[in-house]
Length: 435
Image 1 (cartoon, helix red, strand yellow):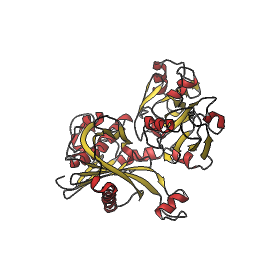
Image 2: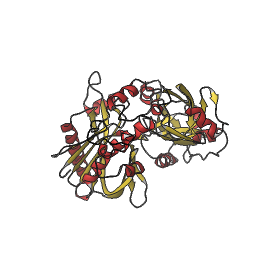
Image 3: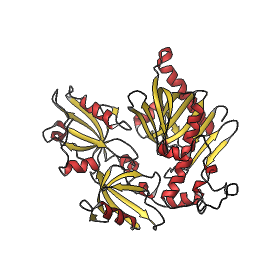
Image 4: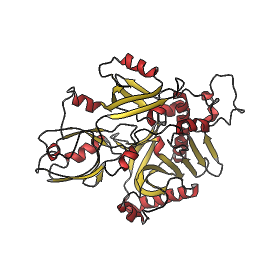
């Protein structure tokens, strides 16, 4: 793109797999993972995965799989409410509005932070250039829009649904009775001389991610169009969907805990795991004599959404731990939680062996997951320890046997998992460090 470039990343199917990214400017570019370019790039290779014309952009596809880094200045962030699928003109207006809001936050004394912007087919991360502390970590599928305006890049990431409470409705001046669902967008604003390359690279990452998505599921795009594959995936229900569970008012609780001044809360928290729709922390253990356990209001497995009105959703584990440690001087703590069992139930529907499961296991622990695949739709989460497969305990099963069991399983595959750290704590393999 030789001038201002807008990159829109829209998820076409219900599961929002990485399927399409469009880059629109005076010379319109489209990056689409379809087989429409077959006539232009036919070869005698067995797979069309290697056809480079499927992935136009500034980067080598293999580099995007590993991840690339751009230097940028982080100017700030703001939040906006948006319909699920606004027009491209509306997207650009939102990007302009975000830029205006961020610039007006500090005026002439605007704080600028030098950062490394990491882009891959799995995630977009922002790290402090000096300390390498992670400031933002969003799955690629959550990125809704990227706009570059001169040397400015606006990156918009969709978070939870908005307008689901009376507070949300009053803030946005919305009617809670009827109307389209609205989503809360976090807009990150950066400045970089590589603004156009950053926008194009994220767009290209969607195309490459779609190729890997097909490859992981044993599908050649030459034999199956994007729409056909989306139909297959959409025919499978999202099992144990977090949003469904979290939207049940019976599971959502506002709690107040009493404690002594100088007393720690007495908890151990772990990450919910990549694959959970709302990334937050899970209560993994409680000190028997601590305030959390004494209250009788909390259980191992509960997901903590906020503490004293500070949201923990999307924050790094270390940041969440720091917030809890900072409660020592307080005598009352307000928690917003979602009651969840410590064990996660997974149901993978695998029609036949042609469909790869789309996740990898090491010593019983799920260590990687393909976004949008049958495993994610079944509730698989990275960092979880597999406890059971089809009713059979695999806790003491050798790694090779677990892999063999999974590789030959078809139909409905039932699993029970829990965060690996929680498993080690509950089984006495790890000594808890309470905060």
